[in-house]
Length: 287
Image 1 (cartoon, rainbow, N blue to C red):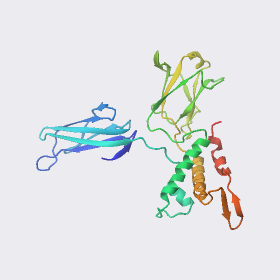
Image 2: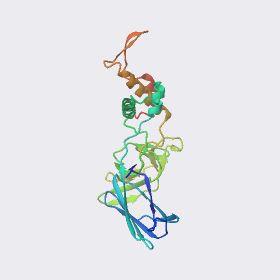
Image 3: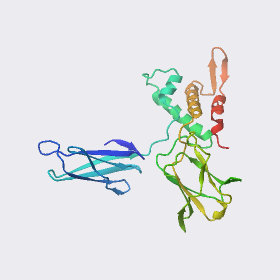
Image 4: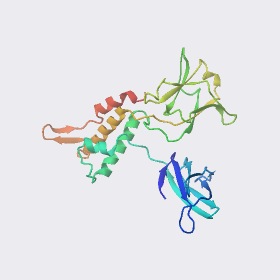
């Protein structure tokens, strides 16, 4: 039983053999049960003599199980399972890149756990410094609900802009208005901004409607957005800032009191934030 991540497509295969161990064709079906009790019946395709394939989307964490049922020349029932986890947030840089910067040989793995801790800490620190921005994209769409009246609205000759959390993909994007009490209806008269944001590797940050479009909803109306939140790609500046900060944290182990000794300069106090790191992430920080 192997482990996979939420949002993965799980491909499964069953081989039908007769009593002599030879592959034979038969009537094959499969039933998949998710960890939340959801029952799926994926389409089964014959790939070759006695080989049958199916697939399903693992959209929630937990153990997914399936049962193959075979009828015909061979009667058989076979079970399978896979563990699906909700992956931890990624790092904005790799362990190999950090070791290269620190001139540590790749085959020297003694310090890998400690280096990885610094890389994770640096990645989360960069997010915090940028106003809790996440420079990675959710694997599957999820729902966030906001109040148009309570959000910051920008108005100009083009229309009303509703500022939203970073959206990293148009896949699965859905905008609805209404309320839990009275129901929801799809909204189609909007545009995403900035223009060409996703093509440029940046997120959608606003939804544009004609002037008064958002204000017309009224104080009790809410906006429900289903989207893959985050950034479509990690900006190069964020990668470089993360590696710089992780390298700094690695060297910091030699200066636990914030003071680093140098044969050339003597004792030097380590500043709280590297100015190069701040310069690299300045354009990505939310005000």
